Amino acid sequence: MNIAKQVDAKPLGVRLDRWLWAARFYKTRSLAKQAIDGGKIQLDGQRSKPSRMLLIGALLSISRGQEKMQIIVEALSEKRGPAKLAQKLYSETKESLELRQKSAELRKIQHRSEYASAGRPDKRQRRKIHQFKQSQD
Image (cartoon, rainbow, N blue to C red; front, side, top):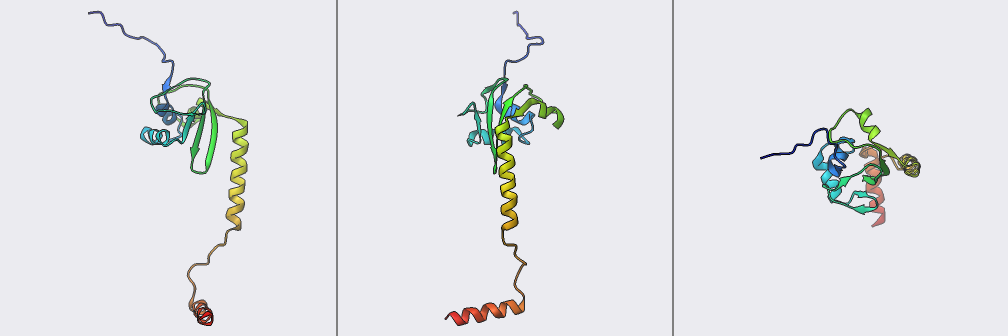
């Protein structure tokens, strides 16, 4: 039997879940798979499966918590490497970057304006609360 082997053959694409893991968007492949299945990842504007082959130039929309970003795939990798190399696998669109910065500023402003509790009321404050409630009856 003659078995043909691929020697130095680069794959045309990489599985979506594996690329998201290699690009350090998710800590494990199973978390990447759950995000894809949950609709948090869109490939070229459509939901896809974790086994979908990702090609260079594809547009990914990623939602993580309150953070939403659109990225363009610049390179393919099946192996997880250092963060510096992982950042070279993609580039974020200008619109996405601007929207993320604006939403971060809004969250920061909202956080400042929220009422900060000093903790549980002390004895004097509890007396005032009880007096107020009794006066309402």
